[in-house]
Image 1 (cartoon, helix red, strand yellow):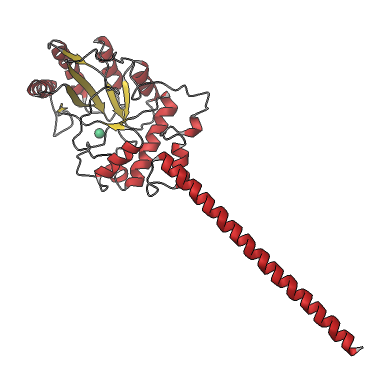
Image 2: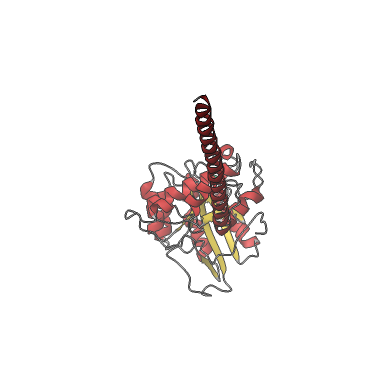
Length: 314
Ligand SMILES: [Zn+2]
């Protein structure tokens, strides 16, 4: 009897032992499968990153997919939105697209306005309309100017980006901050106007000394997004130093234009509060340019030759 009891006990222990070994084996198998799955996911993630040409160090994979499902900056969440009608603007294209070669051999002058919209945007647009001239606005993200953003686009001007905050300490804190600010402004403009802007002007220009990020990295980031950046080769001087009279601004612009031997001239103005003399100078500048031979005023488009203070190879 005693023996039978021991035999049963041993049999039970063997059974329990077997079950333990079996469950450990199953767990190991499961672990192996998970590892395999994880490897597959990493592989797919890497594939996606490669397709999007994004440095994984720049953004988390999640964010890259959010920003770049088709390799562009277009915010996916608005892609199917019935509220947003996408506006085609070559670069974000302007309504005044030149037919190929139409202005070959002519001096092309692009008037550009940074830092808007402002209390002067409507005045600037009225003047441009009066002279039937298209320009380029490198805007920031501002509340209360919905109508001005839309007017810029509706009247055929090019809408470019100039950072959401224009706060150097934020925009240029590191590459992630630069990318976040860019995304914020791009989304803001897309929601307001439907323009998928592919044009950028760095706050302070590409050669600024304020950035804590190597500007070459910012440029490479834009290159990867197929966003073109433009500096300027003529400065109106309306934002440097103290008060500038309208006459001084006219003289600044016209003397530089005449001294510059270039096919493409990009003039820097500011559309900002306190810049009333820029508005005052604008009609005189347009009239003087229109009086020049073989010269045309155009908005920046895909066809415009780049003006770069610094550039890096892609
Ligand atoms: Zn600026």
